[in-house]
Length: 244
Length: 57
Length: 226
Image (cartoon, one colour):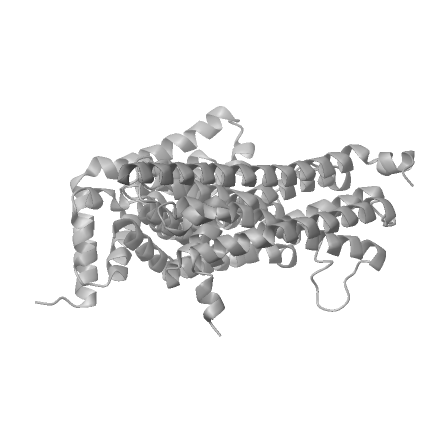
């Protein structure tokens, strides 16, 4: 039952699987994002209160979701690597970090541009925005810590520990709109029961979420192969793999 | 459908379109940067193998 | 001759305090930094008392944060430099206890000192005397939490060349919720509203950090030293 888990610890296996998955993820992501974007920008009806500005949600919400998802992946992979000493975990964590950071930036920028017409300001120090900004700083900290060590294994382990310590921030972001009176709107999609958005607006959004996740998977696989090569440069199997 | 009201986004064009453009840039950067990282890793690995081969030769 | 856990704790604590007091300049510097930084804000922004009072909680807390960060670098550094740290790790005593003692000693000479000096700074920033109790309590809890968070950062960066910059980069994002609650508590005390909620939150943060952070700091030390 655990064989698939242990196989994931093998670098050549990970390298091969990532290579196989990438074209699938990329194609499906392109289709999903393309359809979702067109549906959201063209076909979804304009919002009663926000007019056409609400369409920013189709790029803002998936970016924000991905920024959290990538961080959790990074922390989880780092934790697995620390506990079970599976070096591929460190590779996944290292590959995730820049992707997640870029999406955090995207969430902050699109959110800021959305806030201007809606709340009248490009920025507000409210809990969700602030904790998302803190998330960006956490990403930067992890990405700065890893290369600071002479021994790359030590750098990996230190970065994994730091990302686990920072994972405390993630539930704060998620629940900030629940715990505090916030400018930012509450949950509309990830609620138990019916989501508070009509279907014609919801479906493009869900498609975008799916597309972004698939895109993350694709880019992760590409970066992961690079990480694996960097870490396993001396190994025997690399010679065969590079020939293909 | 692709009428002027689409491009003007009900007056919010200067917020909506920069958002879409920025996110598309982020997606493109991710893909490009990952491919470049992978290519550089391949190069370095190939060079390391070549050096090891010439050392033992 | 084996030493019990409590005795080990007390031994390390006393050693740290002894060593700290042997270098009084290292004790005074963060305090002076604290005083100077809080002076910069009124000079740079405004000297009107009413305005000062409004920005006082934030200024106080940012200055305390930065002053604590200054002294955090030294938490493990001198011991790492002369090899004592490795001896401590190898000593067979739980590293948890040692880290606990070192961090507590660090707080006693830095954070606690800041709390004692804070009435002076509070007066300079036009904080009313009625708010002093809350200010000192919140600063006490906050600096304690910060010492624990800083121990994690110090453990991760000990021995790195540009360690102190990275240390700040790592610790400050983790300390931001602390800053929000701490400054919020002082702010409420100044404006006269109930501080109980904010202080309870600060206390909860402190307890959470004090119990969990030593584990992380211990793990960090094992990573960087092994």
